[in-house]
Amino acid sequence: MINYFFFFFNRISLFIGTVLCAICSYVSLISFMNFFIRSRFIDTTLLYLGFFMYMGFVLFDTQLTLFDFRRGNKDYIMHAVCLYLDLVGLFTHILRILGNKEEKKKK
Image (cartoon, rainbow, N blue to C red):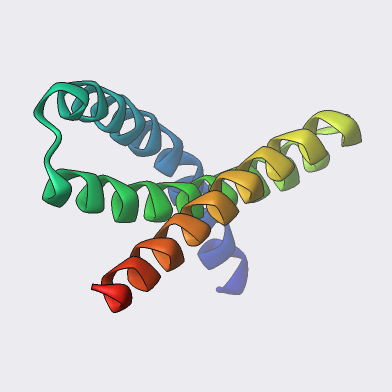
């Protein structure tokens, strides 16, 4: 029974990749539009959406690494670089969120 759960969870987490790519496309399109509009609300929404997107990328890349490892692909460097880039993106979004909160405190 537990094996079926993990098999199902792995398939769902690999399916998340397509959803994340679609979200990434929408975020980049809305960011481009916001470059001209300059809306603070859209900027904050994109900030939190990007944060959750990078959290999903960490989950997705971790599952992809485990899936590749089980299939025999032991390219440690590429998997480490993917996770590193996800964590850097997540960290920069956390810093921007904290910076926005600090900026609101000063006002």
